[in-house]
Each structure stands twice: as structure tokens, then as C-alpha cells.
Length: 115
Length: 116
View 1 (tube, one colour):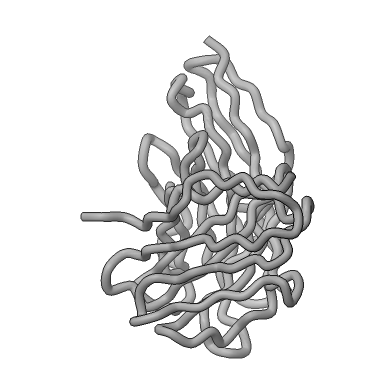
View 2 (cartoon, rainbow over the protein chains, first blue to last red; view 1 turned 60 degrees about the horizontal axis):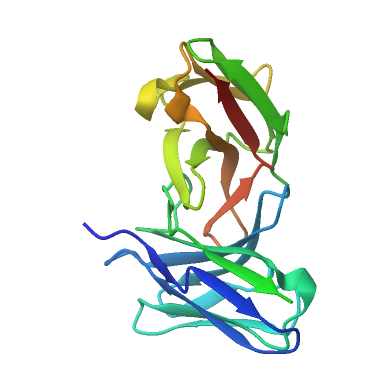
């Protein structure tokens, strides 16, 4: 079956431009997570969705970051007025449920480079 | 708050040698623990997880990990390294936050190099 897909796989943008990153989770997975992976820093939690709602936005680093999920499926992470420190790999993961111990399935990530 | 510490950001082993990747956790409640592997330019893939059943957990590709409560450890091992094991490995701890959903905290990762 299809796994989690993300697009674009790579994105190069200029400082100050807006970018949109897309995540298609596994069909039927109600939970969706966004993480940021910076060099040597592990995975940083950004935001979580249960269905279309986002009960926890605590990980978003600034108000330039926003995310939405529609139809309980596709999610978009938007970064406005990008800065060089936003350069990282953005990973999306989905899981069947939100209970402790549930396996997360990751997409291949979007590599963002802000010049 | 829960956390994991992975000792050694880089580990090198010879092909055929034992692989040992260390992970120590901190959790106020019995933890659920994961090991994920990330190959270059790919997302993370589950190797194995501990969910309070058997303390020795077997995963894919010949890896296993042992949960040791007294040492707060969950080290990953493989008896004989293969070239294809070269990747980055992440230890993670799962808990339930105040909102009732799963919150997973990842370690900073260990890059495994396998020398022919």
C-alpha cells in the first residue's frame, strides 16, 4: 500500500518568500505530525493534527509558521517570509491513532534551503 | 518531561562486528520506546518498539533492543554488522500529554558507519 508522501522533495527559495509543503498521509490514519530535522539536532516537533483539528501547535517556532489539514487527509505546512534559519528537512508522519505507543509512519521529507 | 539521550553521534564498526547503539531515557511513567532508522534522503522507518511486554524486543534486519528499567536504558544491538546497516538511528520515547494524545520525543540520532 501507499506510504506517506511529501512534496516537493526539495525546495530552494529566497529569503522573504513564502513556501508551502504538502503531506499526504496513509489512508485512514487520523493522526498527522509535522517535524523539523536540522543538522545534528534530531527531530523537533512542530504540530499535530487529530482529524482536521490541531490540538497542539506548541512546537511551531514562530507565527510565520502555520499548518492546516483538510478532509482529514492532506496537510499543508506554510512558512511565510522565510529566513535562512528555516533551512531544514521537514518530515511528516501519520499514525492510525493517537494512543501512546502507536507507530508513526514517516514520509521522505522536504528539504528546504533558504538562500 | 520525557527525554532520550543517545551517546555518540557517530559510531563506526567493521563489517561483521557487533553493533551497539546506546540510548538512555528519562520518563516519569513507564515508557514506550522506539528505535527508528533513517537511510539517506529517506524518512524514518520503525526498527522496533517496546510497549511493556517482553523486555527483549526483536526488530527488523536482525536488530534487537533490551529494556532495562534499573539502568533506564534501551540499547540497540545487532550481532554482525552489514554494509547495508549504514544509516542514522534514532531512539524515541512515547508518552501521553495533558491533551491525551501521543507525544514522541526523539534523540539526536547516531550515525552508523560500517567499514568493509
